[in-house]
Length: 232
Figure (cartoon, one colour):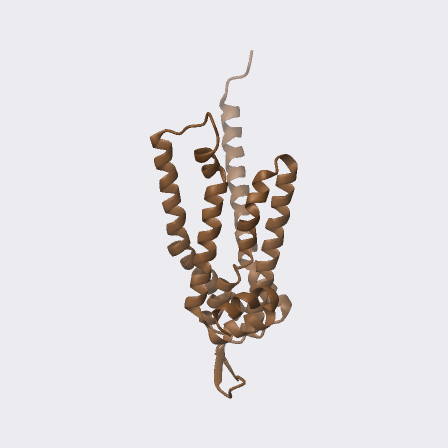
């Protein structure tokens, strides 16, 4: 597959395309997809989201040089993040998946022969990173539908936004799970666990931290209340 065939395949032949990506490992193509999707999504969100709407369309809201300067800085930041920060974050994400897949018994650096009788190495972090980058392609729908969402006011806009967000997340998750399964010879259940385990760990740690902080705050509050003189 070439670059454009992979883009088409992510939408219409996901299993075959993810299998091809983890085998061919087109890292730079994946990074390019990640940057382009990030730029398009961020720029549309900037133009159609609160910052763009406030600075361009809302009468009576601040149009001061300071506000416009902040707007420009925010624009520069989202471009910088899309080009430099996103690829690094997805690299870290792929590295975490790679480690979890190994812990769960995934095949690391296993070999197979392709149709041309050439030896192909799978179970690599490089192949997974390429697939993870390509898996962001469905996010483009969130960016393209955002102009419609911004025109729908009230509960309707919120409902549409939630439905689109959930749909895109499920689509991206399925693509990642297919890539993990193909790359490491894992079952669907284990591949799904690899994908969701980092989020589960973060949620559990967050809950523990909240409980600890809450208990400490209640203890301090109780001490303060006991130290206060009784009300007359």
